[in-house]
Amino acid sequence: MQVTSTYRFARISAFKAREVTREIQGRSASDALDLLSFSPKKAALLVRKTLKSAIANAENNADLRVDNLLVKEAVVGEGPTFKRFRARARGGASPIRKRTSHIRIVLTDELAARASELAAKRAARSGQRARRGPAAATAEPAAQAAAPQTPEPVTPQNEPAPSATPPDATPAAAEEATPPAAVGGTPADATPNPEAEEAK
Image (cartoon, rainbow, N blue to C red; front, top):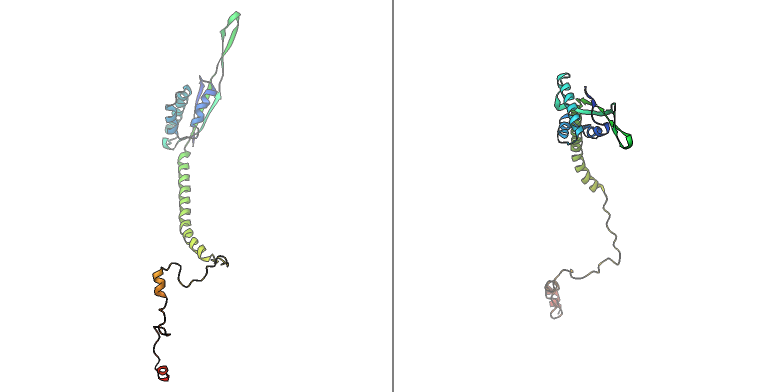
């Protein structure tokens, strides 16, 4: 529902009043009142008076809540111009134009509808994120498991040369790994063969 208030024949030019109405258009009624209260311009006083009249019309005539009111339109049209003259030199005269304007403010109760729409959109977005969360968490390990792991080709230049001892072995460990020298032509750990001894 829309509520309108008009200030006719305001003693200010439309150009100066539009600088103020441009700032409150699209804001809530309470925010617009706060903004106009701290503006030092003359037009802010006239626009604030018109906005208060529109809010009173909405409360008393349309039974609307102030918290749900939104400034849908804040339009300034040109009014009649009062023409005056000022005496100049040599008996001449220069014109003086005293401009007027018509300030019209339209309030609507779409603020509550917009707030509900924004809340519904936020809820839908949060629901989509919640649905995407577990699916994305399970999809990443499955994709990693499905991806084949190809071993890197070994070239003759990169292939290491075989060594008897591991590269990280210390000299003491290497000595322990080598078998002891043979004594008398037989290795120390060889077991005696009785048949061979009888043949000798």
